[in-house]
Length: 178
Image 1 (cartoon, rainbow, N blue to C red):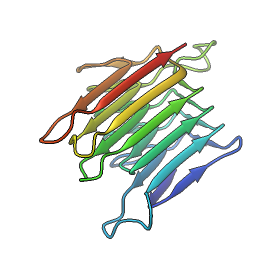
Image 2 (cartoon, rainbow, N blue to C red):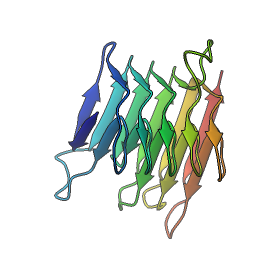
Image 3 (spheres, helix red, strand yellow):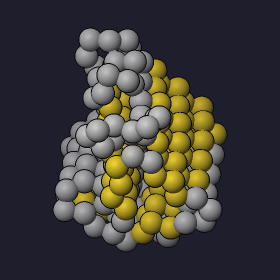
């Protein structure tokens, strides 16, 4: 998989598949570096597949703590995490607030579940796990996408788990699913 601090862009029919991580981010691990970024720290995944990755920690397919995360026209399926976020794990404990946008994508089971199974989390957020400190009004927007066939084994939010906590503005969750 990929381990990146700063700006990560995966585009044009790329595949991140069948990887394992000992810590977090079975397929992709993208975080804000300690010294920050010039401009926003971004993770962009376009027209790609993230499948069959695993970790005993968080983020079976994708683990990200970037300022801005954009997933477009992509499929995230068959990933597993022993912790939270079987498919995708987002966290934001910065003072900035994270903006996550998922559009025209498949998170979990596809039209052929045998070859495109759902994502599984040991705890919460089988498909998507989003947790933020609520500084800077964090947001998760899922539009024209399918979140299906995911499981949160011993927690909450089989499809989507959204938590915005702390002393700041309330986070925003927007779902417009197919």
